[in-house]
Length: 263
Image (cartoon, rainbow, N blue to C red):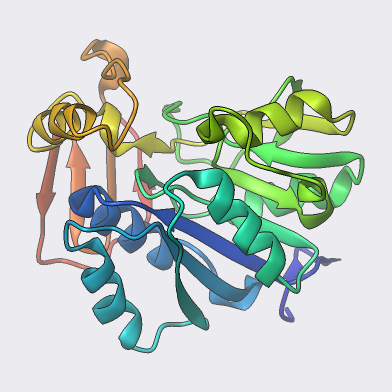
């Protein structure tokens, strides 16, 4: 199977965008999962766009990316502190027809990119395909992925580079991407059934719940409700260096088990 090939379907190489601004602890978890769970053969380049972080994130990213990774990576620093500018920078830098975007508070599972590619390659009318965060499923068995149309998609997923043509940060600039989608006539969709992607700033347990409250106070993130700790929250997922199980996130020594497991 060649570069950029999924189950016999040829797709363009992908530019992987990872925008960051402070929230070092979230960035570490999200970037670890992104690199571990993204097939190198599909990625043309990883673009990490940091919005002049001042909490140690910039230094961490420089050290992390100084070590050779499975795919080429570049760290870009910008002064503007909102994601619309990071997306514009990626649009200018990308030389691929597809751009995958994962925010620095987003933990993606194995298979996330392959699932998006499969749907996008079968449906050329879709210009932006998002993954709705934290939708746990109760089986490990592979499922055929489809899509459901949406008014707009979030910051996680796969986008055709041309969908960003004409994007300019709106007022307030934080919502530039959403406003651009609302003005556009191209088709937007959610991956369906959704994958178990979750957001670190929604986790209702330590250390993440305290960090989220601190980051909201510092105006480093918007205020979001935490995930409910109901029966639906029963799940387990491992990836190199971390284990998530029944409301706990802990470092583990075994870095070999990268397959998701749901209970």
